Length: 359
Image 1 (cartoon, rainbow, N blue to C red):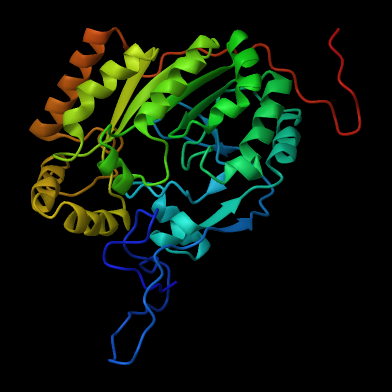
Image 2 (cartoon, one colour):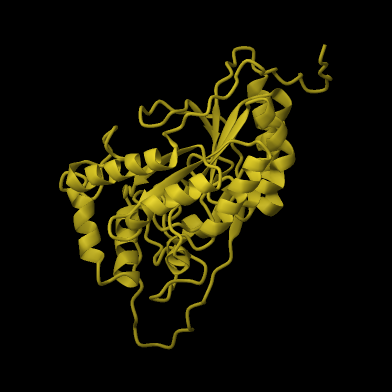
């Protein structure tokens, strides 16, 4: 996993390192021995690997999250957000949470067929499915792989409710499915928003859509009858938290119905990766940012405690919470996820080889 990465990072990538994962029995470290070395590449290509999983629906029992079922079409994410809490999951694949997470992507080519099989099980109970709870279902490779599209086709056919979270505008490609589903109260969309500062966005989340493009996508979805919301996430102390009110205001103007926010989380390997990013891109405030993070987590940079890990504690976290509530009230947005989707229309898919009939 060792890669020669320039000090300023690779073009179009967020992480500045490719550290070994916590399960590696041995670690390697690059050393300059004085011999000639080629200049490090300015960029690195994305590698795709098919996932041979036999199941597609993941189940959740966290009290911090308002859904029981989720589907993640991809493992790893090409958007390259340095703050992504899903980075440590790449360690389970024997890969690094750093550059590997952004460049070695695992996709599920049989997602549609697997979903059809699971929904057809006699004991299946229809509950909301969250699409993209871990990595973005509309990251750039979805344009050619169409894994998310295959999942939506099955959900549309079976009239199964789904909520989508994304930082991309690619979901407009699937408006032919989303609009009819919305007319039956079967779909809602949430856009994660981080910053309107283009230079900061380029460094924080290099391959995601620009915030103004996400706002335009919100408007188009609302015009088609699809309910949309905004998630101001993550809010990073002294980096982008000053934009919280602007995110709420501009999203409300674009048609958002509800809003949420998440304080930056730094689980496991993410903490070192983010700290390195700060020291490289924002060295003048790196110590201040990490100090505010510790103030918001009882002296630690992060916490895994339910009820606190996504909101924090202490004076700064309380101020952020108050600002969010005030901004929602001022712009008429509901606080939290409030769109009610219909589970009563669900019809199991017909067994393979048989036709379904609407009688």
